[in-house]
Image (tube, helix red, strand yellow):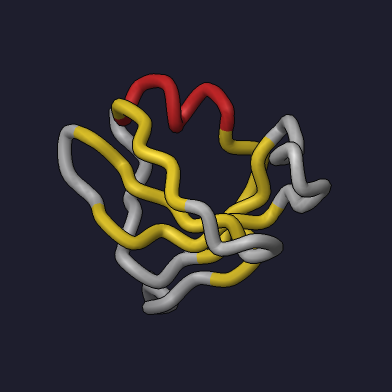
Length: 67
């Protein structure tokens, strides 16, 4: 089952970007996920399956889900 993602979430990836930052902001969600590095503002586009494998954890959620 896919992970629930929303635009504006901040995530930590398993490997760091060449600039040295591990935190990224999600800017587009769908079959592909577009993320922006918070260190240098470069944009990376990954297919959803690859993104879910490389994501380590959520740092900040845009909309906190109440259960």
